[in-house]
Image 1 (cartoon, helix red, strand yellow):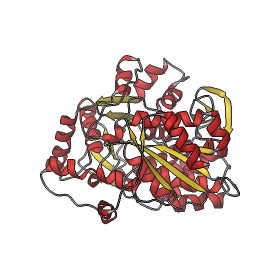
Image 2 (cartoon, helix red, strand yellow):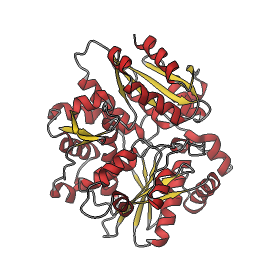
Image 3 (cartoon, helix red, strand yellow):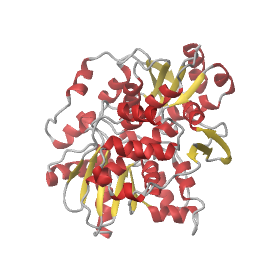
Image 4 (cartoon, one colour):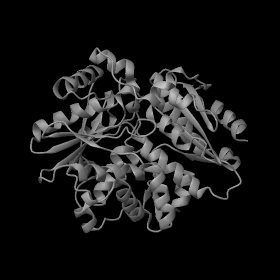
Length: 439
């Protein structure tokens, strides 16, 4: 398998290089040279396959023999060992629950797969692999759980102070061992910029083996395509166009859905659902991509003002037979943005109308699908519910006016002691800390 940089398709790398480096040196993002089409008989008989079997078939097609069959099956067995059920709301609307993993967020799929893949590629290395990750909420907890006590690997997780929920913060600050949390006095974009600068710093990369666990790393992105196929097999086969509504921050989840579509997933359209950080819906409207500092919202994991995976979206829609990249993207994706007040009402409405408790990110997805289906009533839509509502306990209970159930593995965190390194939003401070931590 070969991958190229979105900045220059002549710059290619092997799967191992792309996974362990995270980012190309030219500041692009890695993309597969070929996104293969799955065999028609596999797609036609998808309902006969288990979730791990689907995941293996998709991964094997993408990797093109880069990982031996037995090793890949072991990676899939360890990573995809919890369900992704579809829940019916009504004839038009369904919810894909992606919170049944250890950290109760969709990012468990990517983080666990990545941990297994990196562990496989890291065999025999004498020098520790240092993983850097920025989180606006759920990524940190999933990465912490996925890499906890992985031999030969240490993880530094940067998160914005005061801008993640209490339970989200506890998930990444209470494990210890090979997991270090860094509380940054700034926004998520500051955390993301510090991580990106580290990968481009010559001195750091000469001294340390650095890689990323954000969705900028292709090994986080690929497994997110698995559950789109798993969702499709659970839906009624009634001929109606299928639409996926994706609550979006860094846009890795939506990118993975588009890759699944290129592989043969019969998805008619995608909806990008955002909060006030709406640079992609604005681009879809105007054709101008204007990143800006993120603003804090109720759906904090989507508080991203300069989505990293936008480069991959452009790449996927560039060079198609007809039209400009912008026009091609508009045909494939609709964008909607909602305020916190609207999000609260959407969350409460789902409870009243369907008796379904959703988290704030899923509520944004519900509102976007509702808006889309008003003008496209003949569709069936799937909302990606990306996190368990109890991860946002105070907000959800305040909106609903009652207590909600908290899974035991999350409830126990409330009593654990937080441990985090305090840091300004400064790359020089981060670099100095990294040199000492990784030396």
